[in-house]
Length: 587
Image (cartoon, rainbow, N blue to C red; front, top):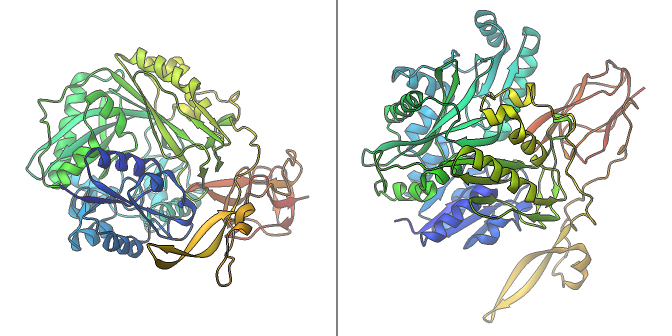
């Protein structure tokens, strides 16, 4: 069995792995960026090492820094979580070449299945058909146009590496192809470190059904249960459940067998998920996620199987603790992703900021997998998932009622969250009847009366400053860096030059409160300007995109609130802005 595991991730998945390791008597090592210095996963781990930097590219996606921590800490295993390096073949090989165990599939399987294009080819070779699409990476937008002309519009451009809807753009006409292609590549590169994309047919009213599989190095591979993940916005999941409602038993069996077939075809072991689209009684292979999924707890709740513990067992060379025949499913489970987003008017705008209060619900059949606690800050530079609420019931009706109760009991203040939208989903008759699709939230669900959940905080979290301090431990002198609130910095004796720089406070924004149609275009959230699409003197129409703002790994178009001439541009590409900051002035 592995002795010490480094978790190459952050947030709730790092917390989830740390807790599983503790229960198994395994030591844990956390890594963290400058912004995550006081994060929950850092507080819980047995050891923690600084990576430095702010963005994911500077920290959690920096291979050399993580490899250095592995060596310094003596970790004999690495759990990648999901996102970041979880499906990166080069990272997996770099780990295994050092004699350290990668808690995931073999690099060769990631290479085949982690890349959505090669996975389509492998699935087809194994007799499992996918949605019609390209089997080579796109070189430019003209290939998107050619595919759309051949198969009809709309089509979907998708990131070949990674998941979670990032790097995906729906293209409804030839005129949209070029911008969508550039935007998909940009978002994929920032989220996964790779910008390769492909294109496929976009189904009109599909359900997203996925199969949890897990295999070991002794030739065993099983499917545990399916999950319905059809309640989505921006092609990202909001609600997941198991078992899938209105799902024929013969389709469930066929899909489970197809998932195992796909896994065995590439020599797969450890946990993975094979995703399908289901429409009109037919299912199509979509992709395989060669990692643990965000929604794995719903499978755990109905099966009683600890998937993270099984991952570690498999990585340690042990066989699965169960067989296909011994799996027993019970009841119904629903997972709600609590994201730092403002769902008002159905816009789901990122809502980074300081969490003043976080009190999750409790009670029978109620589980909270969170990455934050009261007093923590959700940064604009990372994913906006605060945590996951999972509720179990003896049947679907009970699970829905229990989830509604828990959502209403949840207390989270300081940031907006998706909870109002989650309530609207679970209360809607379409969801109760199980007839929703992946497009239902955006095309059918009425969120026009949903308001923001953000509460006014008593004050923002105080910025911290660096101080260099000399300390003695057992008589030995050390020079260390400490980070203290600005108000307490004077009480700390600074060595050398003292000082250091403080993290800037969130700007209130010069244009906060600017009315609609004022011509002062303000950003609705904290983020970074990644693209400017206008210049001074240019004529623009109302609704035209003037710049692109990246927040929480998602790109958001900022549009003109009235027609006119661009008088002033107040930002440049790369600038950080706060909620309400004016970026462009139109007269």
